Structure formats: C-alpha cells, structure tokens
Length: 275
Image 1 (cartoon, rainbow, N blue to C red):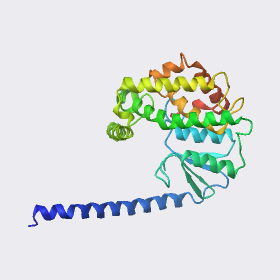
Image 2: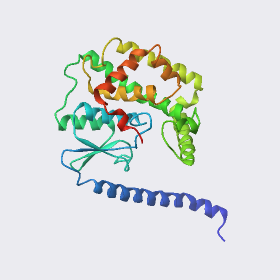
Image 3: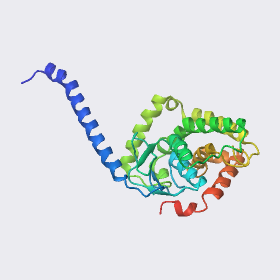
C-alpha cells in the first residue's frame, strides 16, 4: 500500500497530466468546430454567439454590439446560436470566408477594413475620443454590474423574465461570477456601494451625451454600437433596477438615445427576441 506521502507526491503529477489531457481535448474540439465553418457562404458574416433573450436580442452586450455594427454597415450576416465560443474561448466570434476572428473590437476593426466601412469621418476628434472612453468604461465596468444585478443580487425567478436557464446552471454561473467579480474588486462592495458608484458613472455618460443625437454627433460612429449595446441592457434587460429607473428619469436622454438607435438599426426588434 502506498503511503499518504507518496499519494501527496503523485497528486501534482496527476493534476498536470489531467490538465494536459483536457487541454489536448479542447484543442481537438476547437479544430473540429472551426473546420465545420470553413465552407461558409462567400462574403456572408457568420456571427457566433448566445441565443436571443425574451426582452432584447441578446443578453450579451458584446454580441449586440457586433450585430448592431453589422446592421449599421449593412453587411450580410447570419446567426449561429450553437457554437458560442471561438478561437479565444470568447463570445462573440465571427467567420468570414473561412477566416475566424474573435473579440468584438477586433471583429469591428476587421470588418471595417475588409469592406471599407468608416463611420468616424463625420465626427470630430473630441467626439470620437469621448465615444471611445465612454464605450471602454461601460464595457469594463458596467458589464460587471449587469452580471451582478442578474445573477447575484436577484434570484432565478427574476432572471427567468429575461431568459430560460436551468436551475443548476444558474447557480453554477452565480458561483463563477461571484468569484470573478470578487477577484476583479467590484464584488467586494455592497449592493448599495456598487449602485452609488455606477449611478455616478451613468450620470456622467448622460452629461457627455448632452443634446447630441449620438456620441458620434449627428450620425453614429463605430463606438456608438458598443455604447448602445450596454445601455440597452440597462433599459430593457435590468427590470426594476436602479439603472432602468435612472434612464427613465434623470438620464432620459440616454433612453432617447437607445430608442433612436433601436429605430435606426432594429426595426425588426420584436422578431429578434426569443420565441
């Protein structure tokens, strides 16, 4: 019989072997997945991501960001709702003519160059800089709060208004997100403290938008797609939250901004929701 010291000594080796084997399996699965999309239709963007929600086209602001850009650029695309995660283990990702691109920012940059699309020419340098900073802040901070409001501060019955998720998966995701947000830092604050911090940020975004139609000015720029995607989550995807109330009250210009882009890009909004 091996001693417990021997077992403890072998444990790191076993962990390394299992981890190595799992990494190998993941690579094989990814290669198989990417191979399936090698024969996609010419010049048609395949947008891979999560299925739609009940109240808005997607609960992921990053997927809504890319789809909004595809509509703004008037590019042909189709949705794949099965292969969520791509080459970098992230969602969304796209396939175009057999080429795969991951991360929403890289996707938009890639498509802009590929199809010669530029929506920043009509905007001033200050407008573009402001739009970039607002989008970055919302994506880096507010997306965390969206996850906390949906998965941590509220129970599954409230989440079910947005989308269907098995009970086990909901609590597994809650555990994962709690750990992630604690490590990130924002999860160490109370709900009231987080609300206080984020309310100020949303008020600042409202002030920066002012009376402009878009952050790009009279016309949308690329960053408007990302800003809209996050604010849309607050307006339609966080029912009864402090942020929904803020956008319906003090920050009503952000609500009008969302409605303006919804009318411009998402005339078929109701048909894009989960059935």
